[in-house]
Length: 559
Image (spheres, one colour):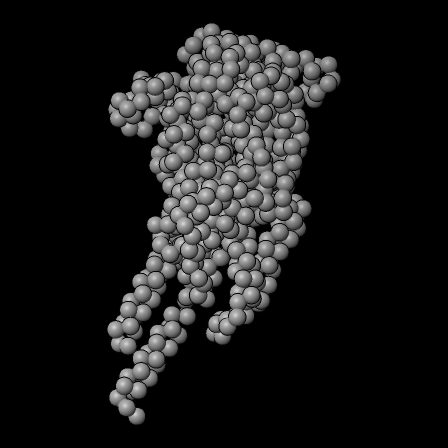
């Protein structure tokens, strides 16, 4: 044997050995996606549009997995930079379609908010680019969405987790998983459906190629496994959606929902004169009690007013206190008032739910998740200098620190544990879950969407409310100033819903419930595990790529 032949054999043996080590974690090799920049950019915009269409007001739920699949395919482009660009463009369109209603606050808000939120989709693209180099890549690529949503719901300034994949799962089989694995887990399943669809497409493409890799599982088997995975997601959700869950009912409570309407139109000044809003809710309370006393509705145990039904602290403003006391006397039962209260501090305020009886306020809950640039201004000195209009926020909202459960004493002496979720808080898992974790018997939502009247925001929030009802398997009673009030049952079914920009009052009887669904525990656990695995997959995939390139360079040198 010649020396040159020996060198070639040793080189080939080393190459086989490195390939075997590589195959332990590496996925079956797939061709990189080579597209002109303008084509990949156009397709990324299409992916973003598909994702956006899954949310309200369109609610075409099946477009979400299609958008996930298309974006995941685009992240196979040769460089992470191109994958990041595709993710960013998709995020721009998705977020423009879902949160551009912020323009009513100021024309500059969407221009700042949409590109910033698109950075989380950029992160998704980068993580998927590296994670697809590993075996089991559909799992890790789906987890990239969980990681981005987890970070976006917390950073910066408390996060803005409004456009999460789980919020597209109403009225479709995947939503049945909500009470078991929570919003975080169900969002991962939506993303997994998309990555499995891409895996099916990969298998079909490989079947048409001659000379498939003999070391890889047959593409038909991989494709069938992906189809089976999608079938399990849908079938499992359909079965779970019909199950009652571990929540039990014991008695009931009747709640008068009051939507007083506001003076003015959409925009930051839509609340008009603060006292007129309180007057409107007093008037509609009279209507609610008239309906009850004439037998059209049940007699309520308490009256539910929305967030911002008074923007003046009834404990320090005598006229506002008198208006609420009058409403309570006319009703003859407690009023759960949504109020802006003074302090802590001279420049501070809190958005609160006040339990108001003949004795005045007896208990309260203070909103824990305030809206950045809407209820408080981060980095005030810098922001005020750059955007003077931001000063219209006025006094800064100080977040509450206690779980949203109020102990309300009823006329018959019972103490009712009322879970309270105030508007924007619906987007935050831990705040919502804390209501039932701390023993809430009935769940209420107090909200003020008047600023966004006529936009998609009220419908998006109502959809999130339905998702939360499905997670907790609890009825939710909603009062808004002039948007979409009503009741949603524990399966997400809309029992009643008001019309925007009108006054409305009805009394609803809902069960008093106890018990906690697995989602309250499993959901946060899935979020942590999926996020960690996505991060690890990205790191391992990054080094696999470097190792493969270094190995190829060494072999070329040896040859």
